[in-house]
Length: 90
Image (cartoon, rainbow, N blue to C red; front, side, top):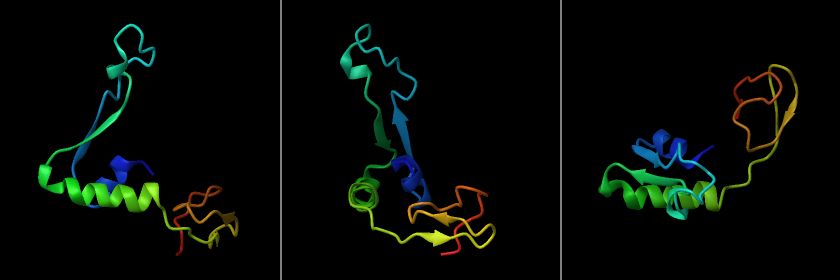
């Protein structure tokens, strides 16, 4: 899951800057190559930083799970079954 989606799930509005930029970089300068996640409200910055640190930089290890719909084994990081797209039953 992307950082933007994680923040959205927590009610924090954000947007990605340079999302549609050219990846060649040389023509437009290196500063225009990198994606930046911007938070709409300054007051949400500390909470957003904490969420990103916990869930992306230091994610909790989740155990594998068996899909109740198709019985396929899925990695713990999956919220949906990779085979049938059923939602995790955890």
